[in-house]
Amino acid sequence: QVQLVESGGGLVQAGGSLRLSCAASGMVFSINTMGWYRQAPGKQRDLVAAINRNDYANYADSVKGRFTISRDNAKNTVYLQMNNLKPEDTAVYYCNAGSSWYYKPPGTYWGQGTQVTVSS
Image (cartoon, one colour):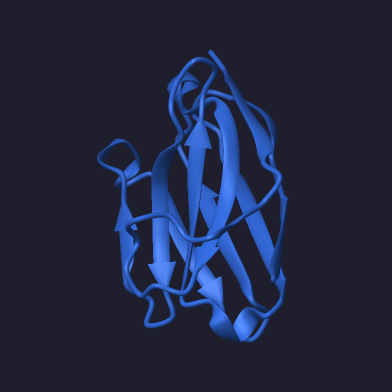
């Protein structure tokens, strides 16, 4: 089993920045891809960004140029730097991890979620 613990969410004004972190523990040797998904009220959970152990990253079109995903394999941690935030970025952000080297489908493990709220 793998446990994922997120941190870094909060309330920010439009144009501001936040950095999310997700630390993995447990059977971390089985994890190759880690990523972030988000879910707004009444909407489905969608991929924001994902990155594998070779630092190959994939982004949703809506966040390209504003968000950057990175990982520290030694710390088993993935980060999401979010800049120029928009009200439409408001959602619960979930960390995800799995054994696949590819970002689809989502990995097996999920964090508990962290709220990001962007005010206009």
